[in-house]
Length: 442
Ligand SMILES: [Zn+2]
Image 1 (tube, protein in one colour):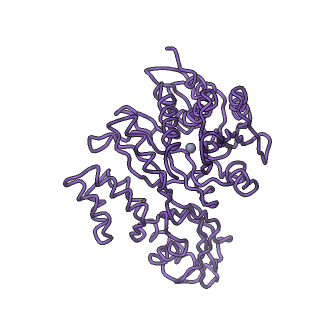
Image 2 (image 1 turned 60 degrees about the vertical axis):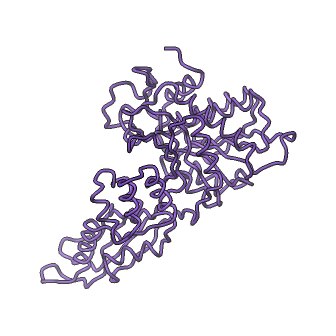
């Protein structure tokens, strides 16, 4: 099968193994740099570690295009998750073309999307589009790690890269989600916030030959069980409300009514149960959630420890503060614990929807059946670092996907693949979005 130029670029990138933290991103970044430089686009490297560089490309606004608007940022990561312990039916770094797909690690997370952004930059440069706003593109390392060589590093050490930017486009959103008999296109507008907590129980220490009650070990064990067995209280925040109302409008009728019941805290959990698997999509967005992942305490077999700690991965719904999150944890375990916040990446308190309508209109223009809906991600992306600078990310990398294709199931999985032509579709929609924004007030 003859592949388009962009699909070939994607193939090249898949063939460069960039397993996060194991193989360097440098060769992939250099490949992108050469493509952009050849098209006359100026680029610059920012690196904390030269093997794990980040690439900035800029296309300046055109003076003839009228009053200059704020610059727009398109960003993506080039590292990928490992393939170890996965059963692949093909070489994960072979980028083989089979059954209408390009197969390989990173096809949808997110070298396919990176290829769309490259396609967009090349199209703007080659067609000499006169845009009233500067375009910046960032291709980064270390998203699948913790970003300390990638976006977190750039935001902390090179904030000048982001000067003037209010809106950015990144991963996870704009793909077809076949549900309710419709082609729904979730556009990510907010994500959950990550917090790492250390919770410590204290009690009398002593000799293990004697009977003890109310020890630190006992209290910690009870708390771990309480957190595992119970949901944290329902918390409905504005971005999630917007998402559920959007889905309810698309569904209409009885299903729509049912979805709206999720927004009444007294009915939320009961409705989730009634919704079954469909409810699983909304469940983590209507509660903060917490998972205990590390336990430590005690050092000798015959000594009762006076303190036992456990660490937990907590995910807060957007718009919820860390204090409210801790309050939720205390509602399950009580006051008898010290709770320490080890890390917390606060998200933005508000969602800036100013470009959303333009995105939705563009989607409908390119795919008349599309039903766009604002969407909140239960995971996290590099968008969390940008929100520290007050930048709103829209997860929008448009993909027109077949009904039997499950985007969320394939990311990070064996046999990750993307339909041939998807990159070109995404580039086409993004190009149209730029033309639409050219005219728009923002
Ligand atoms: Zn990703």
